[in-house]
Length: 264
Ligand SMILES: Cc1cc2nc3c(=O)[nH]c(=O)nc-3n(C[C@H](O)[C@H](O)[C@H](O)COP(=O)(O)O)c2cc1C
Image (spheres, rainbow, N blue to C red):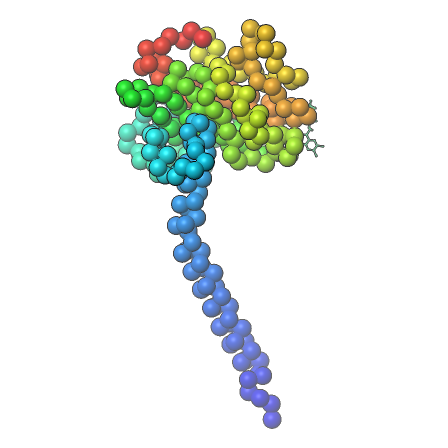
């Protein structure tokens, strides 16, 4: 007589029970780990913002250092702060996928290759002792050759001079377009003026290297050699985010409030 434990029915019951136990374990782990994953994602974002702003210290606690930063949300069209949204929790990437919270861009407008733009954007401010704006950190993104490149551009309180630029997520080729993540390449942005005398985006990536004696050198950065298409993507995304459909109206209003003129 065969052992009843070897029957087809028994085998199926054991297999089903095993599947059930494993699926409970996997989904339980996913639910339990989600808060940790969310916290680490938020911590990584804070680290990138601090690095762009030049405020990261290797031995510093990120949450403590981030207390210097004031997250805000801006209405991109009006260039004004939005007071009704919790800036710390606002998810601009999610908003840019929601047709009710974003605007589709025409081919002419979409120089950064992003298709849609959230109507409200995150900005991060660093205040001086008197409460004035000392630094403005802007999230920017746009298409390179293979990927959408995400970065933070930190400007001085004059809303035109770069204090830091960091790409933290991109999928360009390592050693070619991927060099946008190289701290040495990113360092040459410091001190560059991203807007011209009329407040229009004016940054150029120069193939073959910038001539420091050129009158335009303050608006120019070395393009990446062998990666002109990625370099063009960087120039285009800055053109977009600093322009009229990006942070242009907000930056103009900051300059106005700071009492500065548009003369560059
Ligand atoms: C496998 C492979 C990967 C490449 N990756 C990139 C890249 O990430 N970014 C880029 O701009 N060009 C990349 N290129 C080169 C482009 O096709 C193009 O030749 C280059 O952007 C032109 O730049 P240049 O005028 O500075 O040589 C890659 C080419 C190959 C064959």
